[in-house]
Each structure stands twice: as C-alpha cells, then as structure tokens.
Image (cartoon, rainbow, N blue to C red):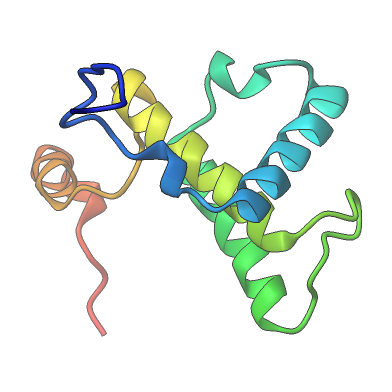
Length: 121
C-alpha cells in the first residue's frame, strides 16, 4: 500500500538537483542587475556575443584570483553564470541577436563581398 499521492512528474527536469548556494548567488546578481538596469532589462535584447564576452571577463578575473566583482561585491562566477544564462535564453528566443561566429555565414558573406578576403601571412 502506497502512502503517497499520485503525481505525474515523470520525465520532467529535476530542478531540485540545482544546489542552493549557487542558485542564491545567481539570484543575488540578478537582484543587483534589477537595481542597476531595471527588472528584466536583459530581456529587451542583448547580443549573445556581448553576454559571452562579459561571462569570459568574469571567469578570467576569477581565474586570476579575484573572487568578487568590485562593483557588486558578488561572486564573479555567479556573474558569469548569469551572463551565460542570458546568452542561452537569447539564442533560443531571439535568434536575431545570436551574433556568434558562424563559418557558413562568414564564408558566404566573404564570397559575396571580395573585400573580406583573409589576409595572407
């Protein structure tokens, strides 16, 4: 005899596996951004590459021994996670803002515009 009610959650994402501390740190960064830029400002549209560059700057700062972002006082890694989440969401819902390098598009554009020929060494 089961003591539990039925729940149809098979195949759903196990969001409870996300560790609490990083989740709270990301929320703190989002709160900082809300005060600085306004709630959901990033949803207005930011190029994917800008978010990737920002994430990399935070990762490099952390890798060089700086744990906290000087402006916010919050974790560089939490900032990087936010930037990566923004990039992931933007690439999904705003493909027009996905400005990552694409060799197919680059080659096609280069062929269409001969002035973009690679420099020889």
